[in-house]
Image (cartoon, rainbow, N blue to C red; front, side):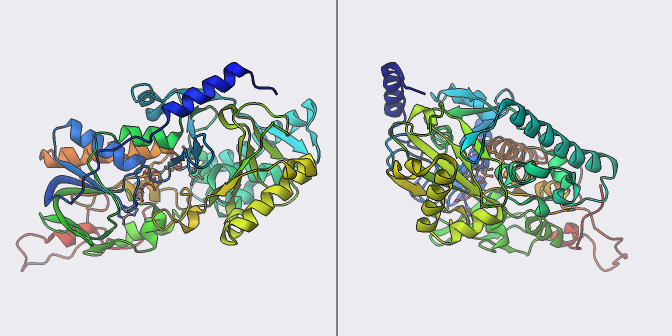
Length: 484
Ligand SMILES: Cc1cc2nc3c(=O)[nH]c(=O)nc-3n(C[C@H](O)[C@H](O)[C@H](O)COP(=O)(O)OP(=O)(O)OC[C@H]3O[C@@H](n4cnc5c(N)ncnc54)[C@H](O)[C@@H]3O)c2cc1C
């Protein structure tokens, strides 16, 4: 593919438009109080805060890192073009809440082809082979869905349900349905979770970067950055959020930290959370996805703008190539699942070496020799993410709903709480809006039916001495989830 001068001029204009990064309404010090405190300034937190502001309530977002965006970060300095270090695609742009907001934020979005090109060794797959792969993917997906639909109560790992005759396409099928889509190997992924996931058949990219879009949407949101929340007090009427530089008293709190962060115990809760919530974090752990960004000037791979390429792999040492991002020479080799996790743990050198080795295998040594600047992400080691996106362990799909249940005036939001759009920015955004709506209803005194978490989980013996139950008694601190 060749790029015309016009393309290059258009790319330069986009780059100029993407600089500087949006200046969010940073607040330098913590307020004493707020109607609602939102923990975390990722997509869910920004969405929640915007809803609360629109309702005329006082909100503050407290963010651990120095930036907004969470797992949506666009770097414009490294390569001189927008490099999305985290999420880069808006799935289902027709219904994606962020796609609708992009225009108002001055960010251009463009639909991209949903399929991948396939490499078999050093050549492209022929049309018949590509069709064969597509048919194999459809069969594998159907096997998972059929199981979940018909014997849904006995959830199984997706890997157990794959047809046994995938032959040459077994590796690519496992990679595409597992690590590439969810950051997890199919053996660790619930069939019910896959079945419930909204298809991600169509996608769009933000020309200035998806992280830029989320940051622009935070423009008017009061965010206190570089302030990790260490403790949340959520019993009784007065709730509070504590950081090293002080505490904020709130009437409601929305926590959007990833399940990785919650599992690591980085935020202490007082009183302790009910066991069913703690179990929910544990059984919705984050998978692993990382990017090895490489500059390949002159398009030596001969691929098109925003092309996506996979290989007919024979083992899990494989990747997805996102080529010529926004018609620049920036390409990304994404590694994921257990292989990606192990590779990223070995550090930048090992990651870049793998990318070059993989490109050499598929395109010859000239491809690796053409690589100029490189950069990598290591989301598993990012202290306030600790992974890429949540995936339900077998049997844990209902935990997404458990996680989204309010505990009095304490709410959880974030991608892991979305039952069908989990693992996506759109799901995170929607979950933040929902949590904000619930919090606003509580603040207005609108009674909502008690959630499972708020009902006593087992029959309580009458306790004659007590006139009214204490808040802690309403939380049902027993383990396990009920079957749904
Ligand atoms: C490499 C990669 C590629 C991806 N690709 C896509 C894609 O193409 N499309 C897509 O839809 N999704 C993609 N995802 C997933 C997507 O990024 C996430 O689902 C989404 O961004 C999660 O948003 P969130 O608000 O739920 O969580 P987060 O973005 O994690 O936001 C939570 C915020 O809370 C902050 N925080 C954590 N702990 C504390 C604390 N103690 N105190 C204060 N703040 C705290 C964090 O710093 C963070 O800013 C990708 C993810 C990765 C890593």
